[in-house]
Image 1: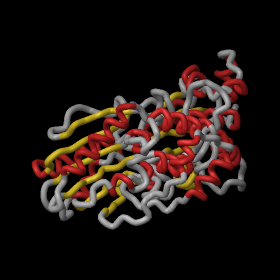
Image 2: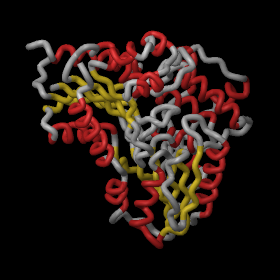
Image 3: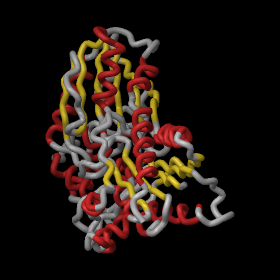
Length: 419
């Protein structure tokens, strides 16, 4: 049995078309056209989709923009935008450029007068890309806490509860730095329930989390922090902000609908299981494989072949090794064992932003012969999974999905294609 190239080509078409559907240009245009933005307009864009969003805003608002700042992930900027300063910074762990970017945006916001408007263009990744340590903390403190949270497998919502209290710009604090001008916030959501408090750690949104939430997260993952970090965690965040208007322009639900529509156009009957997938990546992969197996058993699954089974959301990886990979790659590889030997089945998982973990891949794709190819290459599946080394394993068997930076970020989608 060889690779099912027809299914793989269909998978690539679904990935490409669905990401194209999620590009923020039209969404930003819809959010800005006809909106009352008095005075001079100051634009601050931060997140993985910041350049694309800012470029759309520049086209729509034109010379009304007095000044703009873009802070995005390394290799995500696509050239100059007239009137904008563009910085690239670290993700998922903030770096010195994250702090520089925050300082530039704070300066821009303070420049706006009472009769002016500030447009915030916010997308996923902003938690790391925009950073300014709270008083008494350093960037190194935040980096260490972030690494600890990522390694223990904490969910993004839990990570953000902690990060808000260590930052001078998260949890509504950025908005509180400028109470003169009106703030209009356009948000591309990478959070499962589109909670504004959690997207980029809610820099312009009142925060309802409390220290009790912090304590619960610490106990859940047995986290230990320094005294100065503990002191910062106990400071409360803004609970009421009344000078910000927000609109959400895209979400993982839309990504799932797009994948379903594109799969349907290729002749697959689409089924959206969920847009709220938030378990461990390898558990999600095993779940997807179990569904794939049941499709082939008459009367068990209730799916009609050819079909596309779709699940959107954001899984986590509990690091047990020092290998290279990301949550989408680990999900795909964990599905490989469950579909070993099956014909006419492909499972893929992809991040809409084009980057999965600290790799150049957007995700991974496997089929019924992936395990056989790993064995032929002398690779030990159990060792690969223990080392969290999905990247090198998938690269060996032509299972990496590489899109490059896409210019959007509305979470992940995993799909089973079955004929």
